[in-house]
Length: 289
Image 1 (spheres, rainbow, N blue to C red):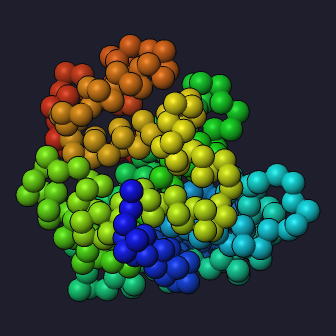
Image 2 (image 1 turned 30 degrees about the vertical axis):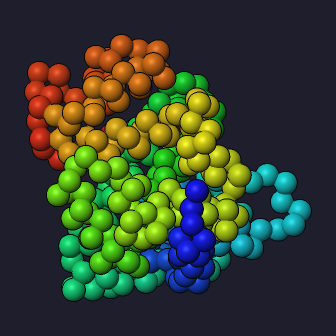
Image 3 (image 1 turned 180 degrees about the horizontal axis):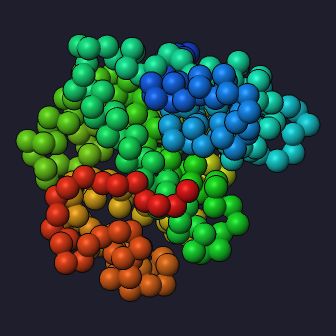
């Protein structure tokens, strides 16, 4: 159980992150700026495609949408395209501007933190595409919601890289020096709370859609859709270390159970070269779009 002091630290960070203007990736700002000028190709779909490549921009949009939700709105909106249609394209881009940019918030003095932040956002995009693909395979009609849940699963970590880079680098250093330590224990030691606790607290504070909260809450991990999100996030996290990561065989087995396939078939659909599975190279974003 969290101590009163640590609970206070958690609540303080929730308040801090609620007050700040969430930054976005520079490439997101650049692409959206280009679309604003390109009236002919400016559609809800084209803008949504850019936004969905950036978990920070997605949560920025969702937070605004929930804060100004109409009382008569019956259905919660999780899909980015629906959110844009609800707000109106011009209004959405005006009320949820693609600024500031992460690169400016961190500055040159925090380049190592920026590198880690970009790695986490890349991992989030990969996880979201895995989750989307598997949701389609499972005939889940709400596949876009599953995609967004996977994309935002590590948003607390991304935000902390933005606004507490020194502490996050300390956590990274401790974990690198002793790989046997559990992530949440190190986070609790340095921050006073685990990132998954911050994640859930922010989702509740920002009144994100109930479905989204459920999909990112490990408490519901036995549900198929939540399992999909969790396994996609795990696979993206472990494969970031190279296809020879020791945790991957268990991931393949768990995903095979979810999709009713064999582990070897899972390796094929996620793009693993079975004959070269010890490869330590980088990740490529899955084909699912």
